[in-house]
Image (tube, rainbow, N blue to C red; front, side, top):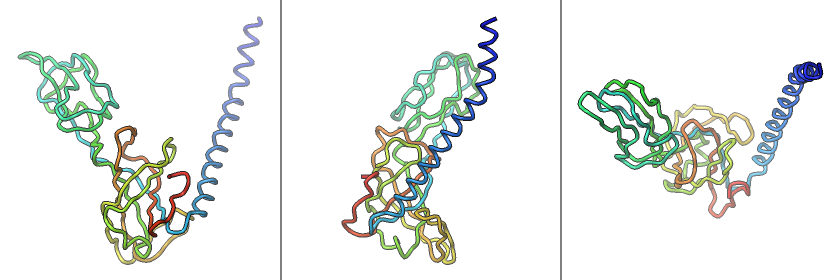
Length: 231
């Protein structure tokens, strides 16, 4: 009888507890964005910021022949070199290996042991860690003079490491009448825009992936200090 009452109490309180936890999570997210907005408004003079999306070259890894998967040799998330065996299969004429075509990080494995694999099937996806970059729009009058190779910083939303070093690899003009948001204060900026691409300079210990959203910080005045959270 006591156990039944306990079960009923849990069933009655579980929805309420989930609601409260949801409110706490929402409040935390709102507070995070409020703090970011205040810090953006207090950016040091000589620093420009815009929102962007992390991009990377995704390399498909295909099986060179048909066979049955015997063993996964490398788990997803592992950094590999070119020619690393990642999968062992058995075909009609014997066993063979699937190897990586280039260096990078194995981000997705679409095969399990005992799966039947057709020749040419993509069994994994590799991310080229040497080609991680973020693209963001900036007003031309603000950053149009930036030289290639200029120092930059990245901040990824929800990522534990804020100070991600990067460098400018391209500054490309958009259409003359283009309008784009300026994320620092949320207002719209009309006039000529440029697309700035910055390349991550050190990816060895960072679990970065294409599609991650964040901000690009550029130093547009020599000697300007970076905001404290991305130094």
